[in-house]
Image 1 (cartoon, protein in one colour):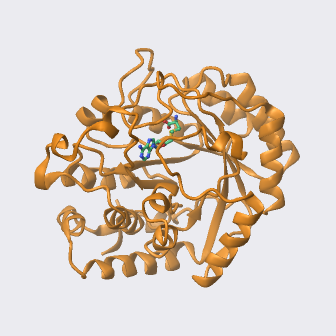
Image 2 (cartoon, helix red, strand yellow; image 1 turned 90 degrees about the vertical axis):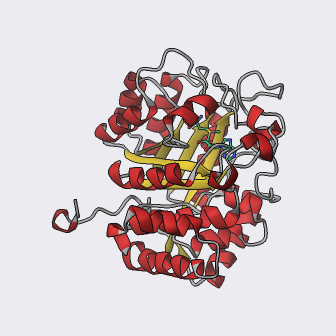
Length: 354
Ligand code: SAM
């Protein structure tokens, strides 16, 4: 199976509803052990701003939604960064809505400071920013950029992600340019977007491989009641049998297939998965091919306002308390926190299949 898995087989697994699916999860777990090992890389997530100029139909921080907005200061971000160092995480992930108030200069200064003052890798996830800004941040030392393409179905993407009008490139072209700038590049999808078909989800999986992504994030679509997609009833989704469900099992199948198609990628067990299956979502992700966990280091007063969907996994008392639970969870799974920045493993050129 592995990297030469056929499209027909991928579609078969996506539609598989029987007990047989357990063998997909264990095969993906085996590929994870073989290619990226037992370390689980910890990336400290810092939600820098919930301002956003976009009106994505799925997202709770979309422009125009009435909610309190915040933007962290440099010293607040650096406090979170120091916590990441204290907890021995390898990476700081700076994420925000697409916020022009997060200026190029602000990000450049932050990246320089983090690289000068800590051993952390820096991942940026700030939306579709200008090429010149992306170049500047890369030159300042940013290591990685995350930009989920959400769905490779262009018509669906345009419907749920209205354009602002000043985009320089199509999102997929932008991802290619980001990669060419030398960033480790991450993308991914929401699973079960209203209107998403099995065929388009299979396209997404093969696109991960084609884009040669270093990071692949797959989480379920979680309806937010104050968004256009969140208020649509299931019937209005209107796709009958071809509608991909936004369930934990479907998400786990996508994670597992991503691992088989892209064996060396860093793949998180996402917060969205842990949100729809609070008991076991995180663990099940780690047992189905995932090797990354992104603990949230955003101060509580801001975290509650970064409400992209409701009930974003359980909020702990403090990041330190959460960390203790995390280490215990990993130990129970026979896994251990990764050491160092946890960058992408590269396949020896000769082994790469075309
Ligand atoms: N603005 C940046 C961007 O769009 O890439 C980063 C922030 S955005 C809030 C981060 C991710 O949240 C998106 O890529 C999307 O996959 C996820 N997201 C937003 N709304 C969601 C929802 N209702 N259910 C699941 N994931 C959601």
